[in-house]
Image (cartoon, rainbow, N blue to C red; front, top):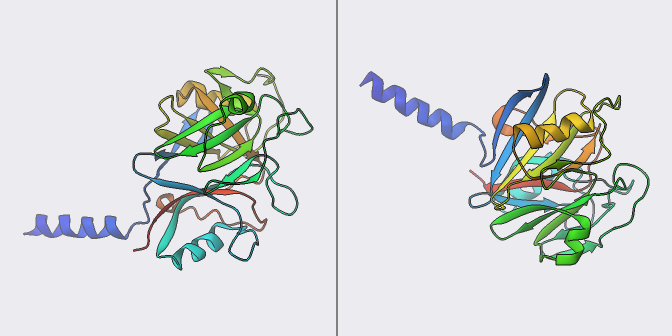
Length: 248
């Protein structure tokens, strides 16, 4: 009887825990701390978000969650998903629900975005892929959702050629990598300041993913309810990626 009661209480506790479809965990790699969230594309409803019905940027995870509640949904795991201008519009290619909001930028330029090769994160039914930009333009996959950012972290198993092992540029950084079969999208944010080289090695050497894309640095944020991380901040965000689940 006591054991049955304890099991029942444990089940209730699990149901009440904001543990979302995406599985998030804290890891240490090469002396630095990271939070890694893995999305199963066969199971999880992963989407990109930018503006509300009035055309204003959601800006915050909490604002997006409130908007989803009106639809009988809720926001689970979420992360900022690509660089943006001062008005929060995407710097590069952006597609939401099959509608292209911004075209592909394929030329080199200033800043991290223009540090070629950069890439596109493309969501199609049942799969997610990080695709180097020029390859993306050659193949033109029909993405339901897409966001372009840069630089690429890992390209077909190789680190970006411009990354230096002895770099002194250190920031909190976030990004995404995908498996070869497109069934896993793995999002990571550093909890310590790291270099590009260190962050890329996390994806190649620890997470064993063939392609990975940098999202941003310094303003990087993560919502992981299962880890009690709200991702609250004072600066409004541009594109947001997150897992949507039915409201409970």
